[in-house]
Image 1 (tube, helix red, strand yellow):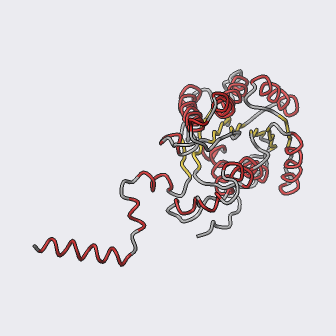
Image 2 (cartoon, one colour):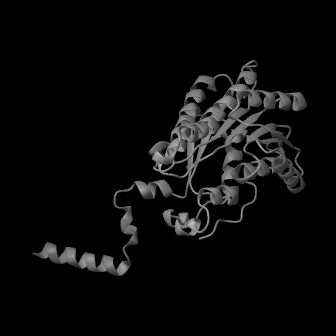
Image 3 (cartoon, one colour):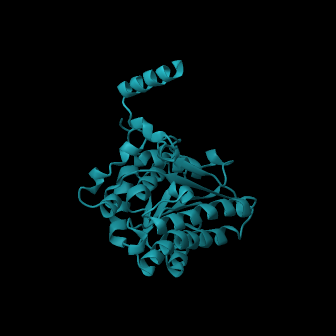
Length: 296
């Protein structure tokens, strides 16, 4: 099964005159979301640590969508760099309407092989980085509690709720992001700020997956076999959802974590879901055996 051919879900002027920051916007899902927001009229600010890569991505998104895209180098793990980035956006545009906390890092490894520094690096990027950006933008917003239409979208993961071996630092950090999402949705909701999250399942992006599963490991651990829909996600599917959650069309959605994984985590959670591997002929045989046993 393949992903549908998608166009934009929302009207093309949905984000007209709005300024949106996307951390980790230079590649992968961040790039997909930035492109979709640009299609919908936003001025998009993309950040990551590598300015040269950001500049190339910004030019490509602008050419594709006609949007104004501002690339700014920023290591979200460093609070001072985040403050400087937010100040630069405000200096250029005078406002910020939305923030997408997408920057992330991960190691796939047995946990006992990780050093304390490696564990800390992931927490610094994923949890502290999300906090740094949220606080920097949020404090600016809270100076004007009468403003409306301001929203934050965090990118979580399905194993933030279930836990997962071999990605323990990421699971811990993303669980913190989910807790932050729900907590601030309550604390800041009556002050004109909505906060939601998406928990994606498998959305393979070339750079990230090659780093996590190098060589032929991607084929050996094919994710589409773990998804009831029989395929992985297309980044534009997630980008459409992200745009909706940030938009005024979702003005009554606050503190929600939307799972988008084709049913993957449910398949893994069900105690007998492994019986999916039984072919129809074997079910016929098993049914015959059960009927024979019941006649005795």
